[in-house]
Image (cartoon, rainbow, N blue to C red; front, side):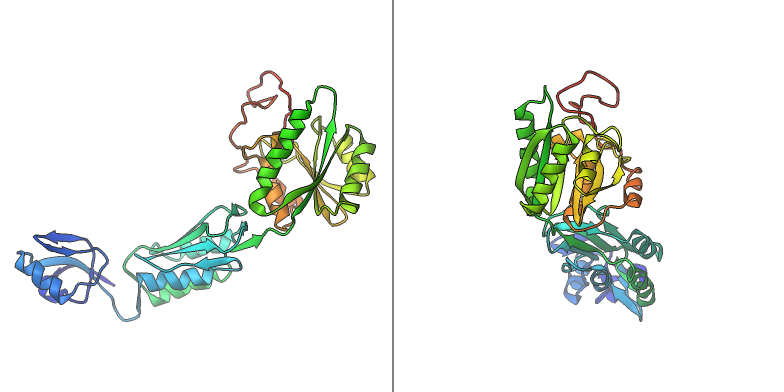
Length: 342
């Protein structure tokens, strides 16, 4: 592509690099320069404009953006119509966004003329939400350059894993001093968290803070109530793998896969399973509606995505979230409150 000042009498058919207004004549940036507008600009006293001229093998910005965006659109993602060198990608369904960062980085590294931006990987998204955008910087790019970016994008498809689990069972353990209203509020907040995913609480149990009670309730929620994901809110935070909540999961025939994670708020979260039903030991901060590490794990599991130890330990960079002021043990220390730290 050639770019620069062009005599007006040679500008017809080229692309205007900048908007120009002279008397009643208006030439808009990025639009093709028509013979009519050339005549009107000349009549207004102009002699040249800055324009772009495509060369053989070049692709216009809209066509280039559209081709790359369609290459990137994976399952559950739609590419929109291109405009001004941009083509946006949208979630076709609610779920969790999956992005191959290495592939996106490779596509962006091909040339400064070609850019791809996405939401963070594993971000919960709603149907119709923009999840990525392709922007071509100049008015055209060489076709060979775009081919290189498209080759890189072959390993960078962006998709949305739809929510699959919908029947949530909840166990709340009780100790003196834990108000029933706190448990009620916790369940309301969880229901609000679940609503955008299409999931709901199918059954809940309130039991003493003891391993045997946790085990019996967990088994009942899964075997009798048909829960396909279980969440356990402890009256006291989990302090060790031998504590009440993990012991109760194991006594019910389940397993503890990981305890603790490098996300704050959310450090004291447990991930496990009973059979093929995921089990989350919720941190105290999950009683708050504010984003915390519980959200990161919950949404992945609801979308049927595994949450492994490797996934959890990778949360650390970016895992320092906004402080929840009412936590009993904020980062800076302070007085205790009703809920346990998490």
